[in-house]
Image 1 (tube, rainbow, N blue to C red):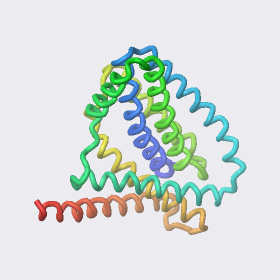
Image 2: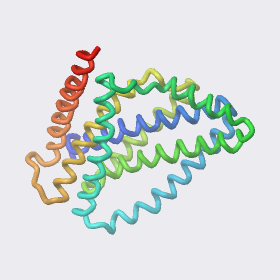
Image 3: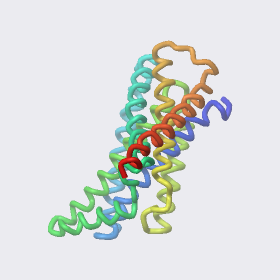
Image 4: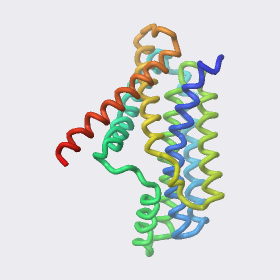
Length: 243
């Protein structure tokens, strides 16, 4: 297996997991700031344990699904998932909706937790648990989606684990949200890559023989990036005229 074969899967899994891990870290840090590291850590640990159980139960089921059906279902889901990220990225680039701000999300999270001081003990742990579990499920979906069907689950998993370890290490050292990370640019990149994988896997599931085999993913990614750039310009122009 060459680098050109698994690079798209590793890159997509790494970038997608980086975004999800940053969002989970923001909530865990908010919990730790308001209540301390004990409920934040316990909630995060419970979320990771639940996630591990889900992955352990899901893994054997993938081997029982016919390959073409698996590719088709994952391709359609990836397209829906990727296009949602891509739409938001285009609207943010055009200035229609505000850019995602981890510092603002952190402030909002801490303010919400402080409003419920009477229930703070269990609410803080629950918030940490939900953040890790829900964002972790998206990471698992991304890994399965870009790695299933071509023997790329291990490279994709390595990319995802590397991203999560990087974010966790940075959060442990800095003890603050990673507001300087260009998350909106990352979301655009992930939206492009997931959409490209979606087209590729949908075609594979339908029996389409793509020119260049796996390298077709790179062409699809370039096409989606071009469409996203043109879409952002097209949306921005009416706004500038109206202003």
